[in-house]
Structures are given as structure tokens and as C-alpha cells.
Amino acid sequence: MTEDSNLTAKSLKEMSDKELIKRAKKISNRYCVGNGKDFKLKHFSTEPKKTFGPEDKPLFKEALEQGVDILTELQEVLYAQDRWSLLVIFQAMDAAGKDGAIKHVLSGINPQGCHVTPFKAPNSEELDHDFLWRCVKELPGRGKIGIFNRSYYEEVLVVRVHEAILQNQKLPEKLITKKIWDQRLEDIQNFERYLHRNGTKVIKIFLNVSKEEQKQRFLERIDQQDKNWKFSSGDIKERGYWDQYMKAYEESIRKTSTKDSPWYVIPADNKPYARIAVASAIIHALDDMELSYPTLSEEEQSKLQEMKTALMEEKE
Ligand code: ATP
Ligand code: MG
Image 1 (cartoon, helix red, strand yellow):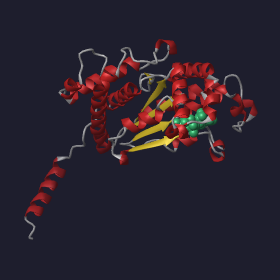
Image 2 (cartoon, protein in one colour):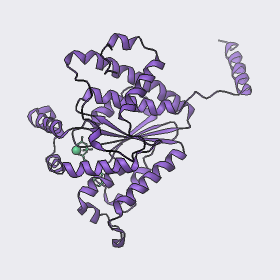
Image 3 (cartoon, protein in one colour):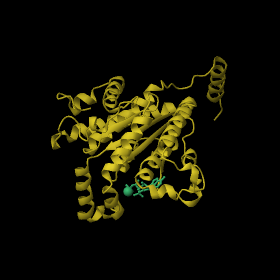
Image 4 (tube, protein in one colour):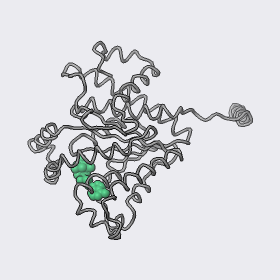
């Protein structure tokens, strides 16, 4: 998609899978942080470069459909090959569109090969363990895609913004020092490296919504009755800590984005565009695995032929 001025829904339809994957990689590269050493949030916009209007709706629809189709095909091979796993972590401020992105982008995927886990404030059993514990239990098995809707990154985001939460984590007192955030970020980086070395590719998606767009979405949730359920007064309270959150996000991304486990900072003020960019990042990750269907040995193939002959000769 979609920032080429001459691209239309029709021209997208005519592209081969190979061309579409190439496009997806190009889009995702735009938002990929890679090695985060010099990362600054202000270098990443909350809006796509081009301004889109209602006339672009068919293009968005086509691009998302194409993205979902490619994703579905790649996931089938991932599942059949049964070697790699993919963990996709979603982090964002409230109303940035995590739920919608997950729902739309994964709509075509075989549910047996994909598992979504939302992480809320930890319960007492979870607080009785180290902070990665509850996430480790939900990691995807080989051949599977795991989606974390929030994650262990909350430990360096909400917990950092509200240090009272840290005090309730039952940590031995002498471990709570000024260094704790750096230590957690280092542990996260090591954990993700460990996962990568064991065949789980981790990508992290930050849906980058602006403070103004969040306000508009909150107002919609208040004004439209069928959206009231999405609104919580706590969200307004968290909005008050916007700058602290942005600072915590910036530092987390800087210290944990690596070539193998990159962050993607995706402009989220335009929801249809954000979904296409998310699909592109996932396609990119799966394509990098160079997946292939398992092949049978000669012996297994001749056994298959024997079974075929037996089936053909079966009497009615
Ligand atoms: P939505 O609002 O769209 O339903 P959500 O992910 O915001 O999705 P909520 O139930 O509103 O879901 O919020 C979950 C809350 O749990 C968030 O405010 C998040 O910061 C908090 N949370 C998640 N992990 C932790 C953690 N480790 N410690 C403390 N709070 C956490
Ligand atoms: Mg919420």
C-alpha cells in the first residue's frame, strides 16, 4: 500500500504474491526501529505521510484483504513446518486501536495456529512470581503465532509511570533501586534474545496515536451509545500522564529494539492505514523465516504411493 500516488485497488489486485510481499516489506521498513540505539519518538509521525480521504476507502479495503490473504498463506506454512514460532506484542495508549488491529489483521488465520492473550493488571498469583512468569506461560508453541495484547512491557511502562504499583509487587526491598528500570529493560532484551535463539521470533508493535486523536476517540466513546462500553474513566486518568508514558515508551523502545526483535512504531491516527502497516510487519517477520512445507523422504514417498495403490484397488 498505499502512499504511491498511482496505486489503485485494481492495480493491487493484479499483483502477484511475490510483489505483494515485497510491498509489505517496504511499508514495514518505514516503521521498523531496528537497532534502537538512537531512537527518538519524535522522528515517527502519528499519521501516514500522505493524507487520505474517503475516496481511498476501496484501496484500503483491497490492501487489507490482500494482506490478510498473504498472512493466511504464510501461517499455513508456519504451522505445517512446525519449527518457528512468532510472537507479536501490541503496546499502545488507550483507544489507539489495538483490539481492532488484532481483529482485522488476524481475521483470516486458522484459529488453531494462533492465540491472543490480553494482559491486565496482575492478579495475586501472578504477583507471587517474577514479572515474566505469566507471559512465559502464554508463549506460542512451534508453528504457532502468539499475540500479546499488552505484555511484560507494562512493567517498564505503567509500573514506571505509577511507582506505587512497584511497591505492591512484593519484591524484596533492597532490590528496588534506581537501577530497576534499566535492569528490567536489560532482562527483557536478554529474554527476547533467548527466545530468538530458540526459534521464536518476537516483534513489537507500538500503535502511535496522537493525544488529540485519543481525545476525539474518547469523545466518540462517550457520545455514541454503542461505544459507551469501551470507555472507562480510568482512561482519562491515564491520559493525564501522557508525557510520562511517552518518555517511558521512548526509553523502552530505545533499549529493547534489536535487529532480530525489532519495534515497529506505526502511525495510528488513521485506523485503516495502521491495520495495513501491522499486517505488513507480520508478513515481513514470517517471510524472513524462509518457511517451506516439510518434504517427505524417498522412503516416505514410496510408502504414500503404496497406500494410494491400496486405496485405488479397494473393492466397493
Ligand atoms: P481496552 O481498554 O481496549 O479494553 P486494555 O488493554 O486497555 O484494552 P484494560 O482492561 O482497559 O484493557 O486495561 C488493562 C490495564 O492493565 C491497563 O491499564 C494496563 O496498563 C494494566 N496493566 C497491564 N499489565 C500490568 C502490570 N504488569 N502491572 C500493572 N498494570 C498492568
Ligand atoms: Mg483500556
